[in-house]
Image 1 (spheres, rainbow, N blue to C red):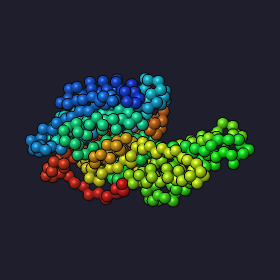
Image 2 (cartoon, rainbow, N blue to C red):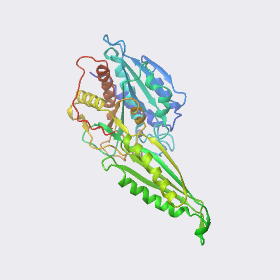
Image 3 (tube, protein in one colour):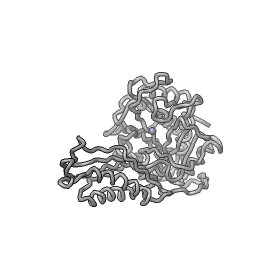
Image 4 (cartoon, rainbow, N blue to C red):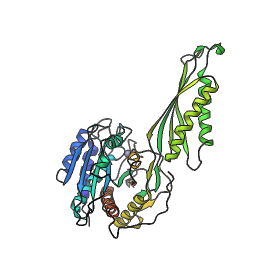
Length: 410
Ligand SMILES: [Zn+2]
């Protein structure tokens, strides 16, 4: 039985694709989605800090428990500052903006899911919170919605959270992919300013040269990365910016380094936050200088909970057959701010292979193309997950279980 109208989802996705908006203020996108869900039995509220939409669907199952559980389904809404390939179809009508990461598909899928769930309301043993989130691409949109209380929108805190993400240009054997444990990397920004004392290039003894100290710091950070961390829980440090000086015969007052730090567990990220700044300060101190260090977490690691991963796998197999979903051996090295949600409540993030038959550039490229054909399946998976997880959380008999190797490092 399916309630997903594939043709309607394709139309919606193509309209959203034509009018991409970037960042936290997405008024047209928000308007379009509100029109799309206006006829559904939802309690809708809008974000104050962004163009977010939170909507609650109340389940009406006859055996709905008094303390009914809630689950959250999320779609991100924002586009990227990318100029789309002129040959693309559908194509962005907004110069310099493009849904290059497929968030237009995510929105259409979530609309499809809530249409199905609204039609099957009497099978829901609890409530479903829809999280339409702006500003995923480095704007902190998830954090803003968490601060505005999205997890408690139904009353009790949601007991599980689900999101999916389309990928293209890297075809997989199965439509869906998932990984218990860490599924995407943590990212942090490390900035070091070595403070010395400037002077004449001919008389270093009268100055305190920060440039050799900065050079040593670069190498010391690389040594620390290979010697101070678990090789099976790796950390990657890339110093992409080095700034110092104005002329070859002047010793500058200071030198700056800026690095990205990627890691794959909460423990690895916490250790990086402790070790790397200490190394930078220690190298500077060895030369009688000071290092001003900033370590700023951008994204925590995205960690899927084993139980919710099992539910997602069971949902995909029940709906589409055993081969529809694969368990991925490795996390992806990209980051995703749904990690903020999964740091607060258990849940799962599912990858969807949306590579078109004709091939495509990878996500974020001007040639990134996504196959509309996945929309119905994505919507159905999200709906099936919500139905099953609510049954499990409400302790309903016959709630499906699925044994799974635990691979949760974080
Ligand atoms: Zn994305």
